Amino acid sequence: MKTKRFFSILLALCLAAGMAFTAGVSANALAVVPAGYVTISVDANVLGTGAGVLYGPALVPFYAGESLMNITDRFLADNCDGSVTAYGFFLNGVKLPRNITVAVPSVISDAVPDFTAAGGHTQAGEFLASGDFAGWAGWMYTLGNETLYDGADAVAAADGAVLRWQYSLAVGNDLGFEDWMGSPGLIPLTDRDALAVAAAQVNSAPNKAQLLADAPTLAAYNTAMGILSDLLAAQTDIDTAAAALNAAALAAARTLRLAAITAVATGLVEADYTAASWAALQTAITAAKTAVNSAGTVTAVNAVAVPSASQLVTKLTEAKNAKLAALSAVTNGLSEADYTAESWDALQAEITAAKKAVNDAATVAAVNLVTVPTAAGLELTCLAKWQAKLPDWLSGVIKLPNWVQWIVMIVGFGWIWWLFR
Image (cartoon, rainbow, N blue to C red):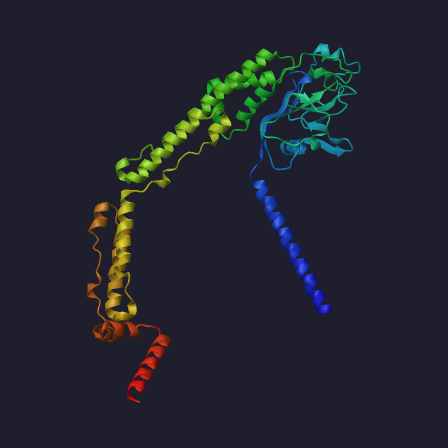
């Protein structure tokens, strides 16, 4: 009984370890490929343009089963102070990346009775938190330019979503949203999602510096970021800025990608490579250029892979491969045991020397000069010579495995005994 119990426990432990390992591998595998990307930004526009956008906009990846809280935590990391309460995720404060100045529009400050311009955090490294500047002040989020009353931990992330964390002095009423009593917003409600996405495409691009080195893109980007920080910007200005940034950044991204693709074959001479490999590279280059010109966003353009010239095969390599294959084929179908050691070793030495000459050759002409040895100089062993003189059927028997030869001999002697008995 003790033995059975011991093996039962051991088996259970092994199964548990195996399941844990499998679960770990599965979790890691799932985490490798994002399920999508969310555009996220954090702003304190309500405090004036001296505060404006604090972080982003940026494209942040998410994985299967994650919520807006996970996106926020991944994006802000140590720059946020948040917790999950009975009502869901609560963002209490955001660390200021720089000093800010407070200049709340009068249409808002006049409507918030307890507003105090000097009553909050404004220095880099401090947390702009709930209760700063007004009693009802705090962080709220919008998804698709709509306020949600669910905690960010209860809302699933979706590819292409736009998440904006905004500081508010009046529970969103100062941002243009109706209050809980149905009263209209203190300012016109505008939709900045498209502009946020356009800016995120640039901010999250691996070649952001190169994109902004393009004068039209830099101008459009600066205008876009300025409008994103302006709480009172008109919808027409927002839409115009989004269109201008998308157009300029896309044109710059295409120019950069097309240049990189074109550079793949720059300096290469077609005559140096095999026709097949050169044609394959040209096809890949043409396809990549078509994909770039068809891409509609900076991210899509940057996702187009640049072909590699490593797929090219030089004519020298082709000649070497063909010659080396011919050298290796010299002894195909031959058995070393059938030949004298001296003649076999001599042939192997010739083959080795020829292969070295091929590998050392610097031109196709030099490869073609290398002579392929023949097996004509191989000398059969005495046994092989004797076997060669036997009839084909008997020679075949001798070459059979030993146990088969024994069976043949027994059957043969039995047949002879039966004839002369």
